[in-house]
Image 1: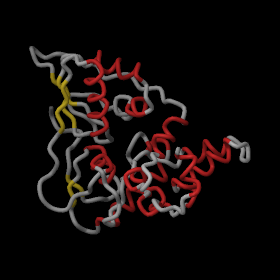
Image 2 (image 1 turned 45 degrees about the vertical axis):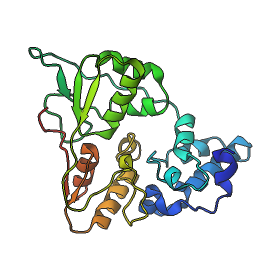
Image 3 (image 1 turned 180 degrees about the vertical axis):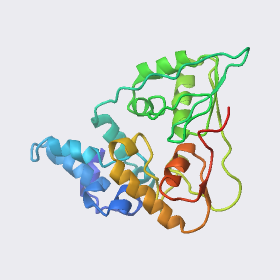
Length: 256
């Protein structure tokens, strides 16, 4: 059974974990509604432009798939139906002496000693299955060690290293110690503890849907209350801070 066979007939059992729905209260954003529109468009019962609009609601966090009782993956379906994005140019590399280490971050806070990469080294393309881009990343960073606080960058580099095995290494910053945590969707946040499952800054969602992504960050900050929280992802931490969150985490401007 596929997503289009099951999700349109599900009584929105994953609605409560969808961070887009939680932040916007829009039923059209639920995985059930997205799958229903795609099914009806495929049957010729709705115009095709509605499928494009439905696909744009999903931010790819995977909360619905983690919660699903029948193991359906709506984000994977969405990535397969969207137009594949064109990745930005990879950051320039320069060797200082024998040092072949660079820090690469996604973010609005800048990066010291590395490029600012809003698309996370072409993360959306990698998630959409663009093997040619994975190979380009592997060749570009062959023999380098990349330091990062971004799970998106780490995911791209892990795919590249697994594909080519050219001595590419990635080192993730350690998450903050102690205190309450904003558990990111990269770490498997489910949303069933009252926390929103994603801050909105995943897979370029804050660029494609800035209003909805901002509402998701605001909802995450509201649920955190007045307490300082730690966050393991530099991009998520920056996005939450940009929406008045008291969040400690890896910073894109730290040296590497």
